[in-house]
Length: 377
Image 1 (tube, helix red, strand yellow):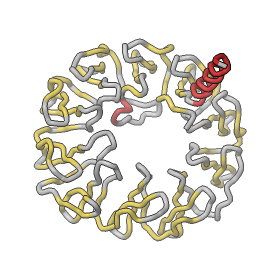
Image 2: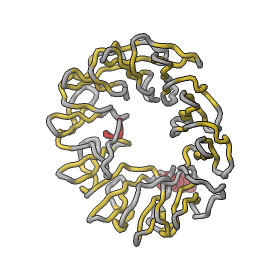
Image 3: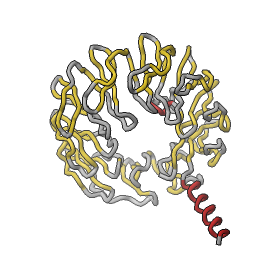
Image 4: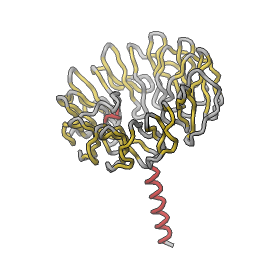
């Protein structure tokens, strides 16, 4: 009985490990492939172009046509499209013969009314347009919000900003109004707080009521990583909470978000870190500093190169890397520049790769490399 139980447990653990597989897009010798977190090729470089996985599918090109591969590198949807977008909510936009349409992971077309413009699915819904007005449809192709708004932004934490006339509010994925469009600006939804601007006043929403904060001329979005966000008053930066109270007075030239209990702050030309009480945690002495990752390591810069410090300020990985530019030239933001699930994407001697928390190179260096993606999602 014990042997049977052990075998079943090993089998289930094997399934979990397989389902949680993470792959990173890399380029070598101008061809694209994918590696696992041990640095081994799971899919050899063989594609003219390719994108990172979105769930269990990734867009790839063969003979100038786009299709989708599975995590074994096999064609799940044959390369027959001129352009494609990534899968989201079970559907992807594809273009064939100058016509856009939605397909599912079997390559089957979603039946939707003909439209002048198509939008990606996001959180199970996609924008639909009728003239100048915008609404939402679900993954069955049916409208859940008839077009009546002027703009709907990308969903964040299950909510999206929407514009009605000249003012903004928040919607949920059912198309229901969560915050009425009463504001000249509004922040993304977060469990820790929502900021807004009404006329010339910036403030926060508390149980649906707007509370202005005197002297504030800009507030940045709350995240789910800290009860604090940063705000600006008289050209100086500090931190407020979801009640609109100054927790850390505006005394810094620049700041970045809190994560793992610390935030980068700038005075003059140098950066350091403070804790959520406003106390100095790491000396202000670096040329640049980025957000801490969940593992307690953060990128810091001296001269032109970056290394990583721990929460005591000890340099644990030497300053010999670049971290900033993605494969296609886009700047990364926030904790994407540091460690994610134990690995950091870095550049050295014009090549890209991954290092672990001890600074060891995982696998080898590549012509390009993108962040790891969990293919079970």
